Image (cartoon, rainbow, N blue to C red):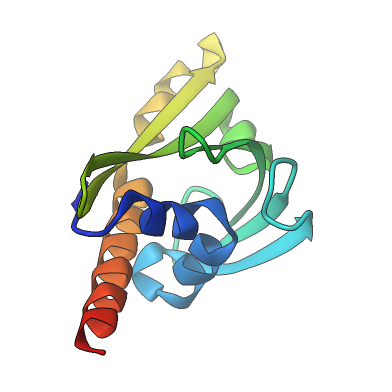
Length: 152
């Protein structure tokens, strides 16, 4: 998703716990509550996500396994519950903020997963909806904040 803000501004949101707080505050994210179980937002941080509505699961824990400020890359992996209870052996989300030009960037979201052979049908539960919603929320937030700064 292209966003008309500096890559450094978008990365500031994605690299910290601010993204989790934004997702928690916006009902459109589908996330009801996010608890920090361990860490301060850097690699090794563990979050407990509680989802709203009638999803496949209501809770899972994810761990920030990679946070690369130079490459503007963040990876989170489900470490308990959620997809793991549906036969997945890996469920990883990767966010990259790619500089496009002096005033815009691209937020690239990738989902990587492995599923046990006997649970292969559950792979159909994987969609990009959640990461697309987060990207849209991020874009709106960043664009609104940029407009507010520009007015000053």
